[in-house]
Each structure stands twice: as C-alpha cells, then as structure tokens.
Length: 180
Image 1 (tube, rainbow, N blue to C red):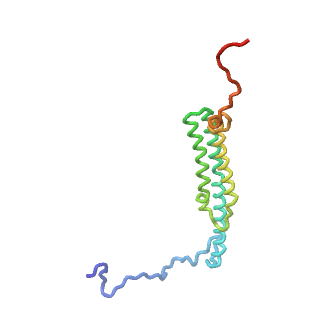
Image 2: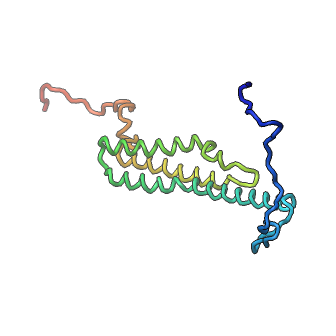
Image 3: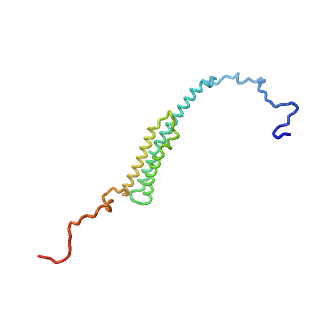
C-alpha cells in the first residue's frame, strides 16, 4: 500500500453533492436586509477604494499632527522638572538640564524617520514638520536658558578673565627714604 493514499471501496469515490434537495427555503428566497444592495462588486470597488484611500489619508494627516504636537507635552513636563530642580548647581539640576538639551537635539536629527509612516501623495506633511521643528527648537531654547540661569554659560566678562591680557601697571611704589 502506498503511503498517503487511502484504501477505497470498489470504485467508490469521495465527493460532495452541492445540489439543494431540501424543502427548507434557501438564501435566494430570503429578502435582503435594509440598506444592503447586491450591486456588482466591480462597480462599487472604485468608489469604496477611493473612500478608503481618502479615509486613510485623513487618518495619516491626523496622526502626523498628533506627532507634531507631542513635543509640547514634553516641553511642559521638562519646564516643570527644571523649575523643581531649582537654580543651584547640583547633580540633579545638571542631569535635568542636559536631558532637556538632548531630547530636542535627537528629535531634530530624526524628523525624517519620525514622519516616515505618514508619507503619502495625498498627505501634506510640511506644516506638521514645521510645528514639530518649532516646538523642539523651543525645548532647546528652554534648556539653554536653564544653563544660563545655572551660570554654566560663559555670558559675563568674568567668565573670560583667563583669556584677557594682564592690565598694565599705572603706579609703582617702592620702599626707601623720605625726602622733604
């Protein structure tokens, strides 16, 4: 006996009879539900696919705007954390400040990757990208402002004293005799 072949009776073949010989009413006799039409699928297919593409483009644009506005939430959270860290230089405030600088920088470097899933011929991504860039630049400005309030930016003349030449002597005094 060959492996994989079943033993069949004398000339009997397996088969399925799809003919309906029952007295139960068939699906052809039941009325269609309200709102259902038996139009040809080819006719509705172009309109349906166009509606699906428009809906998908609208969804992509909506999600792109959500991604574009997400740095605003991060900006508010980071501002609150900086306020809580205070104005003294210590490990926590420096860590928060450099985190506030690093997050916008990494987001600005990956704008293309962030908006890649939303690329479509029908979706205009210029405005969401500009909003995303503006909010991240605002976050970067917030981090630089915090560095300045901590005194870590060289913005005063006293920060550059080591590079200034020594002042020229105006007076010279020395010990000795008093002449009248």
